[in-house]
Length: 263
Image (cartoon, rainbow, N blue to C red; front, side, top):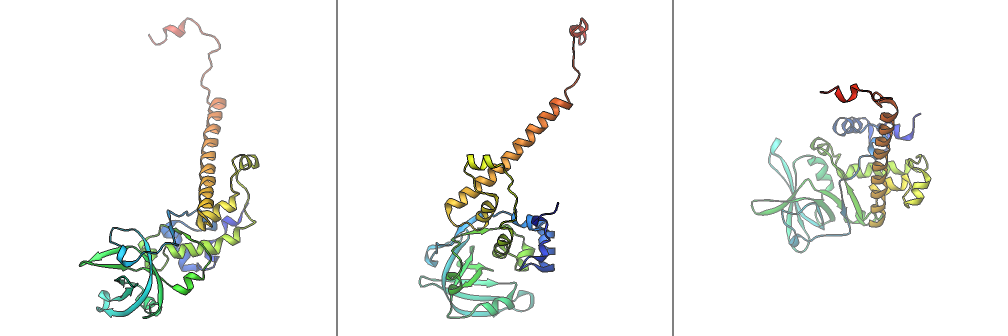
């Protein structure tokens, strides 16, 4: 019997044919169920901002807020790149785009407040961010309070088509409301009550869009519990099958040959 998990991912808002083909070929995501079970690999605390003075090239993904001082289009043809100078009051870094230059030119404007997110790197002694996520500070502050932002594995081919972690996160935001009230519980009620587990929808919601650290931990516990529960159930089922169908030859009586057979 088909469920909402079997719905084709093509028809989810923000996907379409081209993105659906990319999701299928790169990550094996073809249905709503595939997408909602594409879990984050870590979470970024979006309440924390660094200053340029604090950062170095050894740090992981971080976010800054500040202004673009200037934007330059450098190089020609395949070596063309867009370079923006970002300033936050404590220093400057370069933002670089080698792909999606036309898109970046439309988004990046001087003397406007932005939030940028990416991994700092170093070239010729200067810090830079290659293909950072960039968002108007005003828009960032007006979003729902998802202070813990899920980060998702993607591929270079996906990133080149702007199907990065942020885009996956947005697709999860589009999908989860469609699942509410349409999911069948996968664990017995007595287990949920005994172990005070989140229901299946709340667990999936808070694994992708955690409303707090506490709810994230509860979602992780529920999903790990379920995974181990069904592994254990499968082992017990196999043990029962062996006992009832693969019991071997039963010696009803031990005769004289039993002790001499292997001599």
